[in-house]
Image 1 (tube, rainbow, N blue to C red):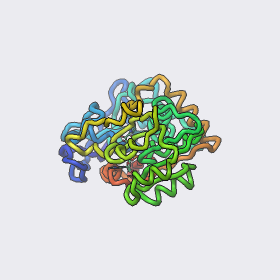
Image 2: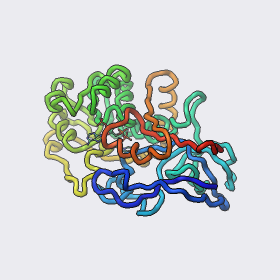
Image 3: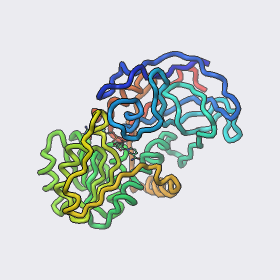
Image 4: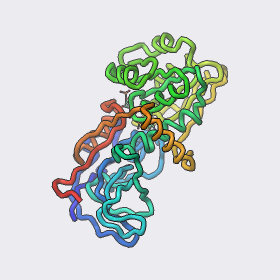
Length: 339
Ligand SMILES: NC(=O)c1ccc[n+]([C@@H]2O[C@H](COP(=O)([O-])OP(=O)(O)OC[C@H]3O[C@@H](n4cnc5c(N)ncnc54)[C@H](OP(=O)(O)O)[C@@H]3O)[C@@H](O)[C@H]2O)c1
């Protein structure tokens, strides 16, 4: 069987460019014992993947992709052929798959996609997958919000941020978002129930935080780092918590400023970084709660789905330009050669 797949041709210098990737034709090997042939359906695009491509800041640091190797990412797909006892043709599966139409993977690395009836399987990559879990544990366990507090979240209209603000609201807090366009400000305030939002491209963030957080900031859920992080520091209350989820503004820097700043001691601030896998033994709890909130209409989510394998590099690069509202995915079609 033939497939198209994206190969990394060079490690990006600074912001990745489309020329760093090449879409090539290849033959897919037959699956060996315990292996599975998968037709890739939806690929998740995550800012943290930047560090796996080399150069730039070393954020996640593992699962690196070498030059001339196929790029991989978290994805869902349909089993076409299985030599693994847990899977059969037609099953919907998720795991680390290739940026390809078809690929062969070890069945030991796959899990079944399990989403409620009527919900797209792509939700296993967004609100009912890593995105939702990151928001859930990062806010509730690391940020420890209490009713009546103010929670500020950056990249607020993105995959993780949009869920964080809604969970903050459910926890009885005021959710204030920082994001990159008026359309995104309107989305989080009018559709997701954030109390207020700031467009960091057009507003004076320092001043806007003072106006929109009159009682100061108790929890800052940091998705971006850099100047936005610095602006929030001046508004933190005594005993504030910072949940460091990510630092997208620094991912393309070779030598990011290590921080943190002196405000922490004076205000007894607790800052804690986390990786969603720290909570792997409680994923079921998050999936259940998020599923309930979704089915009762307490939270909603949006997916930004780009169409076609050709668009994987541009969709990934678009994360750094803020092209997406909600979770950035790419849907893969199989050219009339559907499984
Ligand atoms: N700790 C973990 O386990 C974990 C898991 C998943 C994700 N993350 C991190 O969580 C963060 C959000 O990830 P996501 O998947 O939800 O992505 P996302 O928020 O859907 O997409 C990234 C967004 O970041 C904003 N952005 C890009 N460059 C920026 C810059 N220089 N300054 C400020 N904002 C910028 C853009 O929105 P605007 O238009 O608002 O600029 C863009 O839409 C990332 O830092 C990611 O690495 C961490």
